[in-house]
Image 1: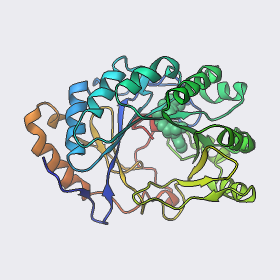
Image 2: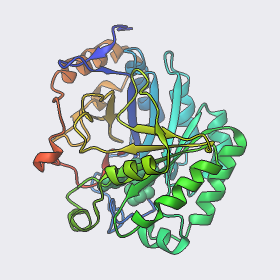
Image 3: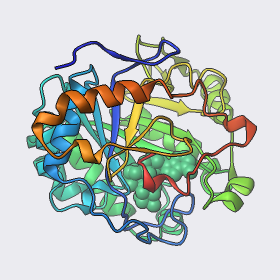
Image 4: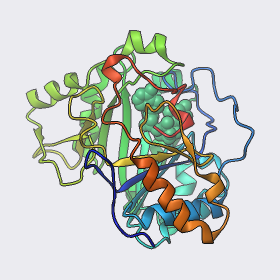
Length: 327
Ligand code: SAM
Ligand code: SF4
């Protein structure tokens, strides 16, 4: 094991890995895969064994929180086996899943048995027609049933909504009501630009400040930042069982609190969401005896991490869409 924490040249300590296990997705969200998914990479995604080795290496360097993401991770038939392999690695304390929720009803219990304790479900509109327009699927009721199943099972449940001026900007009140009534955290994510969504971005980007101002006017108060917390600002209110988060990548301190690394479904280390390239680790995932070399390679690469994503300067790296590396 290589136990020293993983730290970059700017003093940021990494304890959170977002691991994409599948870049394919059955939805075609307007901001992500507006033309549906088209396979660009003929290599198969990482196997369960490769994922196990990768997780072991990162967990051995202090990354204790692992999020399984995609594309749509539940497209994989072996998603529960993946979750189990990840959750069993020494040092892993929390395994969460990002999903569009279409299989959540059937998968919530098996995933919980496999060690998943927290689920983020994308719900960009609470109106069935709009949900269909945004995702291409008439699935709001099925996704919502999956969320209720997670709550019944006691899974920590977050609802992610990407803010879009014309598509859900008028639904803030309805989302606030969900957080008042249910023990969930509703997260508003500012729409981010990719090369596939430039038209939508120009038309629909809405600043997270709009949500913050409305929360403040409705007497929601900001919770103190926990040490090591990521870039979300969290709000609560006395009348609410749930909380509301705002993720605003254009805000000035966003990158200073960066505590995460990403690995693509083919084993590419991505040092930043908006990086220009990935660094393939797959050749170092072929045997258990490669662990020391794998960890040293990660440590060397981490020094290439830049201080900022430079989004306000119009840089989006090589990001075609977020399904390629998990958002
Ligand atoms: N398919 C799963 C889902 O939709 O939750 C997991 C993968 S998805 C890429 C992860 C998160 O990224 C989702 O919350 C999604 O809404 C968000 N996302 C995708 N494209 C985005 C964009 N251009 N700007 C902001 N968030 C985006
Ligand atoms: Fe699929 Fe998630 Fe992208 Fe929507 S946001 S197209 S569900 S990967």
